[in-house]
Image (cartoon, rainbow, N blue to C red; front, side, top):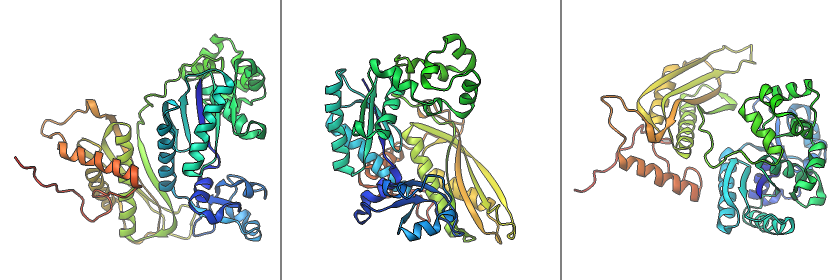
Length: 407
């Protein structure tokens, strides 16, 4: 049986878990900025009880936030990634869930070699208790005959208290569950596809599952057909090797505008380092790196500027110091004095599998010691927290000099 684990109000839960004084209090996570803008990204049940919702601009609810002493926490993606890894480790240590994979920072999939519903609940309860005792993050779990149906089960586990966080969706209950689920809530059905389905009179997940296969093939790509099959209880999605990203971007809209080149350099270093880590996590390398800068387009009273520069690397790489050096060179090319910058970012293009990377005629393969050093740094950062080890990304040095090995 397939298992889906979804963290409840993840960003907000992470803030409460790492700041015990916030427990039981209304808390929101928001991308607050210098103008008092930004929106609410996550919130605790206590904040939801006040009528607050995700996506609400902060300026519209400032008085409500102050009146109820709502804690506003800035987004901390490094913290959320670190806790996500802790959840992965907690589940793997139990050796209960098979084929356990991380789908996103707050979602995980796996499987259980059992089918009896009561036994499934018992094992999933053990997994949940380990997660909460280790990380203090509340989660909801769904189990069923496919990944998509497991996500459907999690939907009900989240929204119906009677499930106590665990819903096992059996074939006997599937039709009723899908009949009550709006087509927009089905994993894999985007807005464009939702519009197509509504035009065909398909409004629920069960309506879609009841469709003729030829209609589904005419309306959708292979992904849509897979979703249709999964809703019918036929597992056909493979998460063991996630699809490689064609581009990787790390960017930030700054809370406060800046014209300080050193502030921008530090941000770009961090972006390049994060992009390099993502490359290595999916066993990829890139050939082109791009850096962009932008002022605040909403400030008509300020001078406007936006520019980007791309660097073609000598050979495909995922090496942090190499990518950082290229990113800083690109930043120097696009930076102009006299502007207040609101956003910056790094984008990696021309991504390929590290196993089949093609080198230029005059370029040499990356030093094996350098590869091993990257692996060691990633392992230590995963175990002890981000930035425990930094390699050229947070220093003034753009490259890393390694001692020669003894003969």
